Image (cartoon, one colour):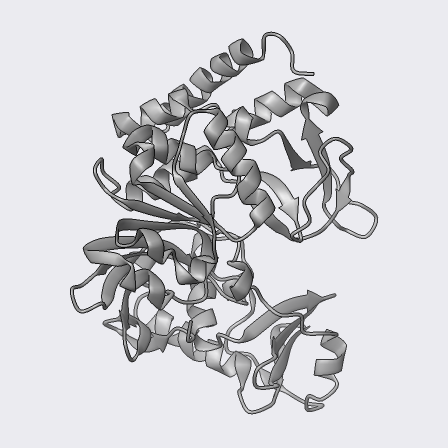
Length: 398
């Protein structure tokens, strides 16, 4: 049962969150500030998971369910914090009436932190009068913000998970928002409502889906996150031309989104099986794996560039050994620390780490350029990332 003073408590916390976001410079546009002030986020997240302070005995994150029944104060405070709230793992819808603690798992739906939601809408230059397609309805909170600012008539939101969309629709309609909603795969957009002035994706793709360019008006803009099987990420804002091609710059920052389910990485088996087929001896690595795994903004950017060089490669670490596996070509590599160096062993038709090293060397020679200096070109012949001082990097076929 909801406490009698829920709406009063929620309004107080919403005001505090709005003030904090404004002080951090996240709500420069008064229209988006008003939307954050008015949209009741708690109605879109009746249950979610928060990580426990410590991992379990196997090193897995322990995810604790949070609802009004479990802990009212914690639930409402989290709903009005600038935090991403995980609402689903591995595509399995939780039973929030009897929620259970989870150990590990891959998040597949969430309510994105409010500052990022507003940032996405602002970065896409969404203005009143624009028709908008949102890919990834999720809980419906970001959809509600768009409806509050733009009006429901101009907002279309699609979601691949029918149950997720049902829950989001209930919350949206209950709050008086009436956008066009549909169960659809974001890879193909939504033709019935095209064409759009703006397309914004709350999930990531390995490459720009051609259908999205076809569904945007000439001069329209598409904001999406590019990702891949190395979990490298980059955001790009494309402007669509009259001939159906698109150009745009990468944006700065370290934003990541869950992959569109059709673009998720495949299972690759046991790393030891892949390593067993490699040569017994290797060579000294020219670049260490920390270049793309460190918790730095540069490493975040470099992992995406490396991923462009080996788009079908996945990476995992077992003990101290870093494994690279390519399920498409059958190639593999390992990096093993040896006193003052890393030893590389590679096998298969593609020398995976060698390909990554070429990109890292070119990046260093170009003066370590930031994301904003790269442009993405999308046309009939493919999709290519370009920088004036580096080799062209192709994206995988969408």
